[in-house]
Length: 289
Image (cartoon, rainbow, N blue to C red; front, side, top):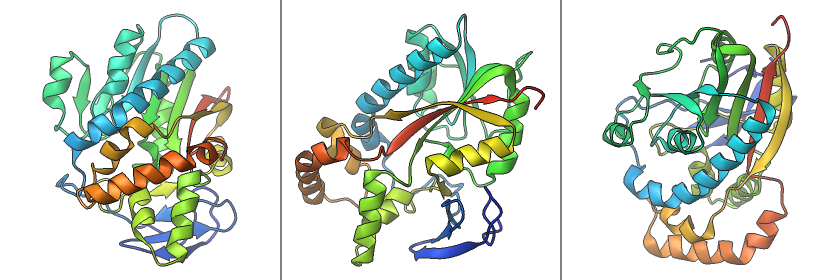
């Protein structure tokens, strides 16, 4: 892909960091873009089984928050599409909350679990795999997935075709303005590249292709005929499961995970009062778009 111009605003990109992959910055809108590649073998330093206990409690809390906001914004029966279902926790939460949802997932690692929980998952990459719904979906959601997709402009155009006229596009995504990303950037200036590499997930098979802030996320979607209806903060830290989450990275030692968890306990008040690490966006199509 072209890394000379910003995919959001078209301004020039400049190299900001040289890690395992290059990270570029747009000085106009602030988008951070990488030249990372998806590893189609699905092999990496990510230990999926170890990652689950470190994330589940946090994710489920956030999903309940999103569904409550969704039900307040759109009344009646809801039928949606999740792109990048992973372990299926969003689909499970939808089941418990009486919300209909189909998932699309490129990996088969959780297929047995999907079947056990009777989750409706189609395997493949969106939009190559895209189950159609007459009149479009009531909502389409990305849970920590949008930042992993390289061609974001083509993606958004496909979403417009699959979303109902009154549907809601939900993007749950980490922010480049968040506490942890800013700390990782600071540590990089002192020669410590590990935290920033981890934030970009460059050692995992599905690295981040972009890091957004609230402003450039809105610019991207508005360019394609969407209006932002709501933005809200989601939780990014569950101290009780932080160590397990760190150990999902095969390169992380137990002693280092313990040390970092202790440090985060001390820092939690500052983290809670800082700019959010994760935000959820609700977008709606402009009439006639």
